[in-house]
Length: 322
Image (tube, rainbow, N blue to C red; front, side, top):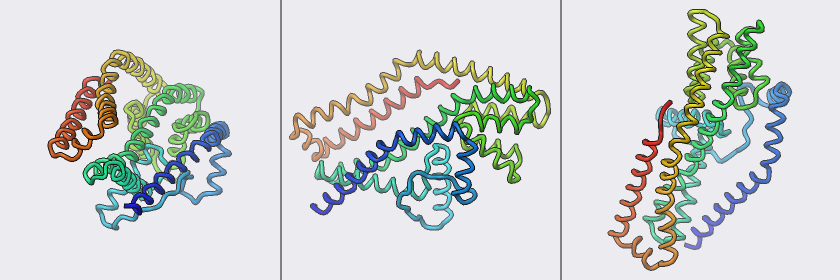
């Protein structure tokens, strides 16, 4: 038991030190991002000189978990890698698997030390396994939201460039040079793919696959249709920008109208947790009985399941697709 406690303490301390180091270097990272957005050509050339072709700079280097080289394992890693690419997380799929397993082990050790029972430790281990996945999902949603916020300005810029006599690829290059990441980075990828022989249609299709955004899908669909049937691309982009602007305003009004429902979801989520911590802290004997007796464990599991169902129902009610 002492050895397990030492290992868990070491892992937890390492995680805290890693997060503290990231907090200390946050200002430097923000400065590098601002420099990259201000001097995109110099930054791109510097990265191209220091990295092998086809690779990108990554901030983190974590232990790698090698899965069996089977079709199933390869397909699973490819799905994880695509998900990390959509989220903009600079990790390999193998590193993500290793981070998830390490988080699960830490959760299991912490649960074993606190509850001194195997079943609660399994639940805390499950929570540890979910933490990296939830963090990546949060980063993905934040990145997509940021791209959608930049998309309207990018369309206005492309429309002005096309009406000034520039070509379609030149307008994309203007966006990749003048806009800030992450949209400029994605448009730069489209240009790089086109320069190595990939067609514009395939590059735009890959752009939609990397970014799960309905607004961007609408823009790319308009571009692809115009390239097939012809027409005034500047007018198409202007009409698309007007449609996206109306959708943004409609989503804002819906968000205001559903604010009460979203607050109710947070209350339903946090109130049982807070009440449980209060009861288990003030009356540890009662809490010990709930974790040791089969009836108490069944009540806790049933309450957790009903809470999850309530949260999902509320999210379904307040989630309105525009």
